[in-house]
Length: 191
Image (cartoon, rainbow, N blue to C red):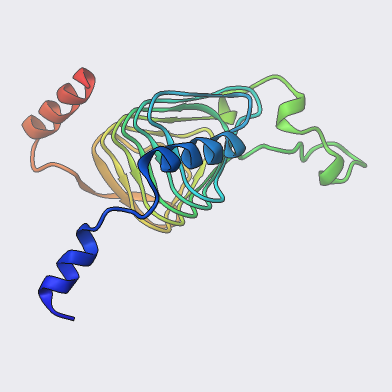
C-alpha cells in the first residue's frame, strides 16, 4: 500500500450514517446498563459490556466502558474515565461465605442485604483503567491516575499515580512535579 492509500483508508467516513450509529449506541447502552445505575451524559458502553450495581452506581459524564468489560459494584465513577476492554470492576463480598451449611451459590448475595462500604468503588475523574485489569470493591482510585493493563487493584491508589501489577502498586507519577499535578487537578475540577 502506498502512503496515500493508507491515508485515504483512515480518513474515510463510516459507511453507517451518524444518526444510525447514535441509535445503535443507545440501544447497546440500554441493553448493557442495569436499573441501579445512574449515567451522566455521553457515556459509551462497548459491545458485550455489562454495567450494573446491587444498590447504586453513579457514572459521570464522558465515560467510556470498553467492550466485554464488567462493572458490577456500587459507588461512583467520575467524569472522563476510560475503562479499557475486558476490565472487571467487581465486588469482594458478593456472597456470604460464613453461612454454615449453605452452599456459596445459595448464600446471601450482596443485593439481598444492606449496602456496606466495602461494596463500593470510588474512581476519580480522568482515570484510565487498562485492558484486562481487575478492580475490587472497597477501593478508591484517585483522580488522574492510570492503572496499567492486566493489573489487579486491591488497595487505594493516590491521585495522578501510575499503578501496575498484581496486586497493583504505584510505580510512578503521571506528572513531573507537584505544580503540574495541582494544575491538572484544578483543571479537572473546572470541567
